[in-house]
Length: 273
Image (tube, rainbow, N blue to C red; front, side):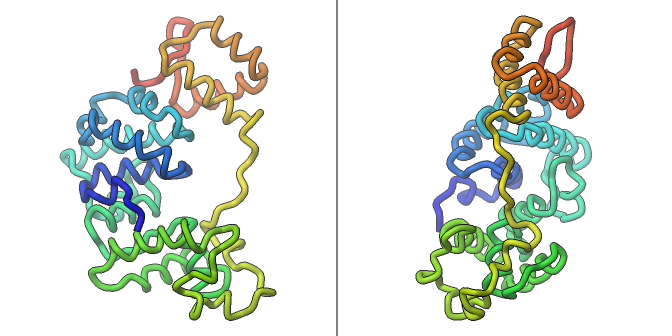
């Protein structure tokens, strides 16, 4: 089992922060940011009081900065509605901003040690290949995954599944010969000519659009500038010259619409500062 820092705690806030960071971000990039954030913002109350802009500043290098906005808004709701304690109920977790089915169940399994299945792209791949040998819809996938969790085994089972999908039953070049499930694997038993069922199973990863030259790249560049302080027309013009007028203007429009940045006295600033 991988020795990851968030596996050494059962603190619900620390687990929630980790799971939000790990959405579409590599483990190695999340570790340092997770540790640093929790040193200064160890509770939902501290994160809520720090403000949205502070969370966005601390998201540098993690990408998908909307997650920082969602995490701050979740912290505010936890303080306002749950007396500062992360809820231990699935519906209440799902009601938090930025928290979806995977993150909610991850908090239940890893913080509260509930017997629920955590289903990410790795787990979806294992189940569709090894258990059913067929593509699965999201509801069926969740039901099958839940049925695999033994009583009192939620924490260990889910960690093992996540590790197995990340290290053995990978999307490309799975290590079938060394897999502990090779004798019972439905996909392996069907023969190599059988199409990989994980490719059309709900929740499995799809190729991502090119980053270089994208609006995503421009969004990141804008936020990198604003993490250092407000930016006026000269800074905007330099971004336009470097990345293109259309891309930068589209990036600015989406960042404003999503509540990440705002205009103040003719200058761009991080919202919620």
